[in-house]
Image (spheres, rainbow, N blue to C red):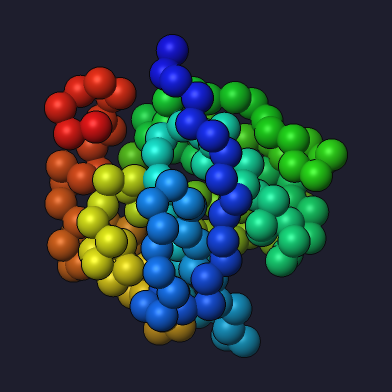
Length: 169
């Protein structure tokens, strides 16, 4: 079992190029556009693969912005543990797991209102994370997560899950 990382609140940043990224805080950039034509509604840069310490704060911040959330879809291979749900502000949010390995997260509000997020690997260098987040939320972006991460210099090694205690952790 991995040591529990203290939960830190997620921050919703209007522009990740202007605000500092502090280690240990999940960073989210989300822009709402009238057209919603881009592939992604936002991007999230968790600071570890410990789901409890990272996702709870993010979901609380999203609930403040979007209202109650129903479910979250995540890649099973990207996280240390795979609970079936989390409690956010007294409400249960279901977590759906799949083995897609596509660096994305889907957040559902209500029955059918979906928000797609690019998930930046935790060990990504700040300048690369900022570039990937900015590219993901451009209104005209139609690139996949893999294309965004490759184009911004996030290497396949950054996307590989690193186990606690392994070199590079």
